[in-house]
Image (tube, rainbow, N blue to C red; front, side):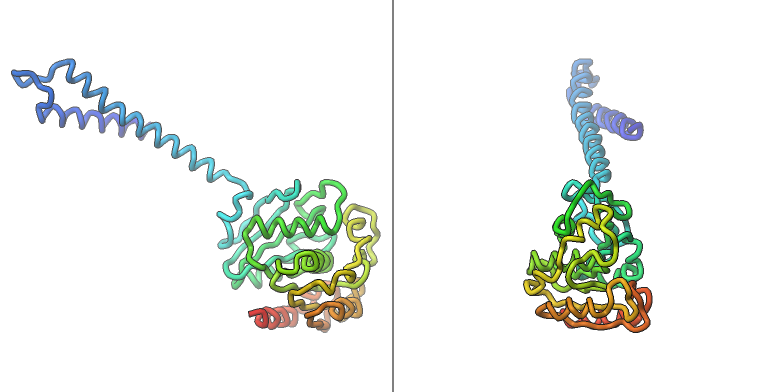
Length: 292
């Protein structure tokens, strides 16, 4: 601000000197009258003051823009890895994104967070625009009271809309697979493809007790009911030694879907992408290649 005022003062003085040298408004003897000098100073100061006010206003506007929150996520979309908070459906979702290219969303499992999807995030951010987030009641996202699986699906849809994602690919692990599948059932044209890792047929609560809002949200939902409505291609992966959602559960889901490929991940348990990452990445890459 001090620099701006100094610049304005210098500009004003320079214009006054130039004015005097050109003998504008001078008297018969070549001197400038006091009235002319005062008028000239006022005329020069007026636009300079306006310039100062406009510059200040522009600076304040820029500061406000720079302080904008994740509601303007489309302005930050892609590029370097960063985290932010996105308000959707009266819930503040903790979101992480990076990369450029085709849109991809990662959804973690129950009791976990987006950090548990790091192997997939780091692998795909080099070729895709990857978005990972903490589901309600997990990580840095609060639950905000009771909710249903459809509410979790609504959060995913709102995130897709906020980031202007175009028919994203969704990779869901365990609970994340239920959210992905439910969204594909409700909005057949929204997703271009889904990968379900460690999923199950029938009731989605697995062996976990329904002693919190997350468990109650999953307990009453049968993810097989609307499976025939899914039009997006699906890849189902289940760890060979998965005791939480065994291979037969994943096979049941794949068989109920119109367009699905099922694969058992050898030498892996529930978190198959950590137990045998090379195999899992190869299967997903092949699946993504078929999507075009």
